[in-house]
Amino acid sequence: MKTAVTRAGVTAHKKKGLIIINTGNGKGKTTAALGVALRACGYGMKVIMLQFFKGKWKSGELRSAPKLETFEIVPMGQGFTWESKDVEVDKAMVRKAWEAGKEKILSGNYDIVILDEINYALSYGFLAIEDVVEFLKNKPAMLHVILTGRDARPELVEIADLVTEMCEIKHPFEQGISAQKGIEF
Amino acid sequence: MKTAVTRAGVTAHKKKGLIIINTGNGKGKTTAALGVALRACGYGMKVIMLQFFKGKWKSGELRSAPKLETFEIVPMGQGFTWESKDVEVDKAMVRKAWEAGKEKILSGNYDIVILDEINYALSYGFLAIEDVVEFLKNKPAMLHVILTGRDARPELVEIADLVTEMCEIKHPFEQGISAQKGIEF
Image (cartoon, rainbow over all chains, first blue to last red; front, top):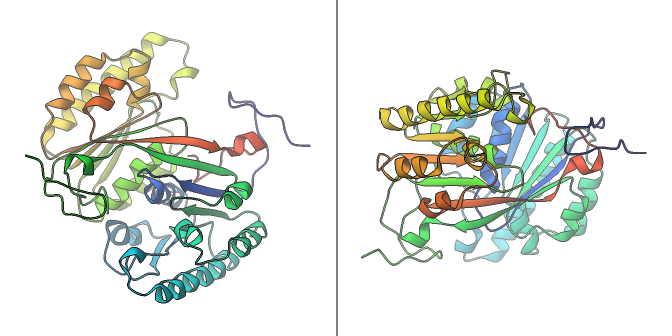
């Protein structure tokens, strides 16, 4: 039987590796995953982020990661898929990223694996949702996996432990303000 | 006249320091602010986070921050206010944090100032909303200010450029799973 627990602070006893989803149309999905990495590295935990769509362009996070010593970011893509002319290239890229993700998850080398923007790959049908769900249900027990991106599939939400929807209330693009260094990228 | 802009990528020209709010009942408000810090430090930008309610306990972020070189976290509190017996002590603490925040904002030493959990202070009435709004409206033009915490006041949302609500869809406490190192703290 599960330990009875309330949000008010009655002790919960169970610990396990969580499946965490950051979804929604607002900012902060990838950014909050980066924040978890920052926090976890403070305890010497090992974290890897596979960026499903980002190319090798040197983003702020890619520049900072080495300083945290136990944080690794691997851009698997070649830019955002909606800029691509060839959907088959995108599919191949995404499948390669998922193969890498599975390998990292099973490797025993990490405490947290972040599959950044995998939700897009799933909502585009570039990966079979049942394969991903089946694999994650059998992930190593103490490993945390974070999945980001809009339109998280309900099958994924179903097996997740922690799901947050980032909702856009107000966005500076609406005021004609451009994306800014350090904030958006 | 403002530059016409669409989310689809038509260029926006204006740049300015943003007022950013992360609010809502879900995870990721402080964590996304930490992610912005990670990203911004990659470009050598200078970031400070004043934690309005957190005490000197060595959280993951507090351990990691020095590694990023241009990121400073200052815990201004003595633990969460709802554990406190004395509301006057909390008020004094919050006011001290706000004075420090104003000083940092005006100092010219930072690119981003994060007022972590200030929204609680405002919703408890520990700070006068009109003072905070008036001060932020006159902040240095290129400085970004990030305000976190539940229940962001509408007066603050009104003057903000970027507002995201983190909505809880599913939380592990409901399953009797305790808060975990690197994820929650």
